[in-house]
Length: 408
Image 1: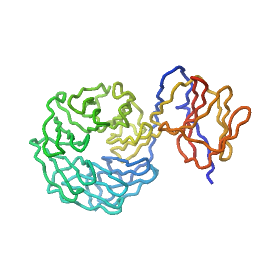
Image 2: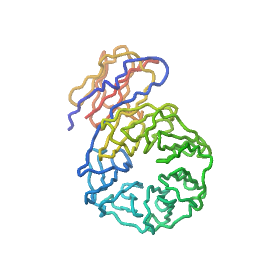
Image 3: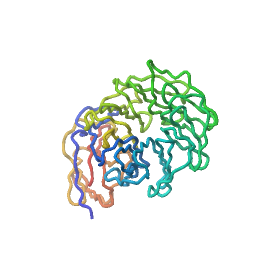
Image 4: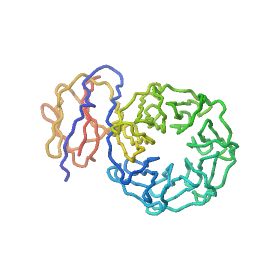
């Protein structure tokens, strides 16, 4: 049986404001959870879910351990043998728990179908650097890279065929909105396909800014809303599926290496010199966040949901934030301690409040069983409750007072 304890975070304690509106709480605390040895540059980090993730890196010391996997949300990482030394892997695409592709230098694409135990080299027919890889389903995938390289597979990545791009620009990032429409962005260019990758054409209306833009990342959160980031602090947004793009004010001149959104509103961009930018309003405003790594360049970010994100750095370090953004409605000024813990149970002192509810970070109501009521409040059993972050709220009419806490 687990011995549960409550830890309260003062950075998240709601002790201010009231009224009928939403207040997002932002944690400035990115925590370092991993530092790889030997030293390496992590180029990409990607998670399938809150537990399973991969990162890939550049190694220049003769090691072949440049693929890493976690099954416990980044608490520990297993180094996997790629079979390649001095290799720079650039991108990851995870289809499911067993199937993942990675790509990198010298035209290399590797695939695993057994959860990373074995990585199989696939024939791409090129030695150009492959910067990005994307699959629309288990069979159909695309890759892009240097000198306008575009590749396509129809058999799950076992074989790859070149697609004429008509350009020599480096293509750095690729994303498909659906099975038909996709984009590939890079050095002063944005390509688009509307026929499942058969043909590609330039999006000439994209507002590239002099002296030039290198689109480092392009992504869509749905079929209409998409984002892209580039050098010199540039962030772009579309609201009509990529037909028109506008430049957003990021507040920085640092090169932005990657951007990710958990939904239309909550996003994070990372870049050189420890730059972390956070938005909760779809990019209308970007707030800087603190990096515990100082000026270490941040190359990649992955948001799993509005609360949980991972960042990886040039010096092989991984950051995690599982209190990124928690939205709670109708907070009232109240700093009383009203949660009390004793062996596997939770006592809630309601006072003048009438109702108590328990939520996970996604805003889903968690049912606490075996409650007992006395004159002041309720005693709840925590048996069967998964350890993690929760939000405890007591309410009366339009007033709501909430406390975040971790159950261990």
